[in-house]
Length: 223
Image (cartoon, rainbow, N blue to C red; front, side, top):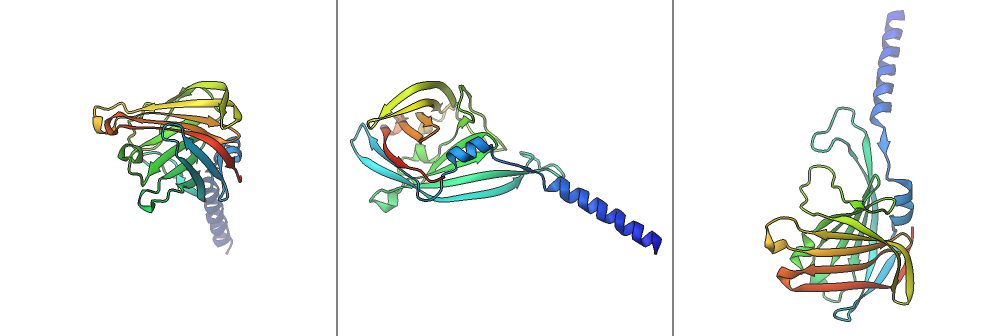
């Protein structure tokens, strides 16, 4: 009986150690999460300074997921990584061209993906907009997804004035396609402010003759 009890105790200790090791979670950076994890009820109203059109963007869902670390090859007993996904839609009247964006936060990085848009260049784009806290530096990708974007935060602008409002310390994140596939050529620029999120976007897609400049007019955030 004593040997059986010792064996059961040893198994319990091993199981406990494994559970403890496998339950390690790498969370989203607290500052990134508190500032950019928008909830439903959040919206932004942008005006295209080129066409004069106004459109609103609203959060449809905020989801947290966990996946095993390890990049291309998942290591044994790899910790779990927390990721926050924020899904957004544009309130366009044409439902077949309802533009959608998705924000993704992993660690200290903030990603943007775009889809369901008549602009095929934009729909194929996926960017690492910035690393928290906002600072000048090259964007970095994670995992095994091949991304040909050459993005970087090139400047921190002390004040950006839009729609009668002033936004302090906006990070300008510039992105361009670095492949020879001219069908996907783009030169896009995103301005990010800690208190309001993305306050300005310049879409420049020469091959499709697309040039849009979205400027924030009003917003309401639920965090």
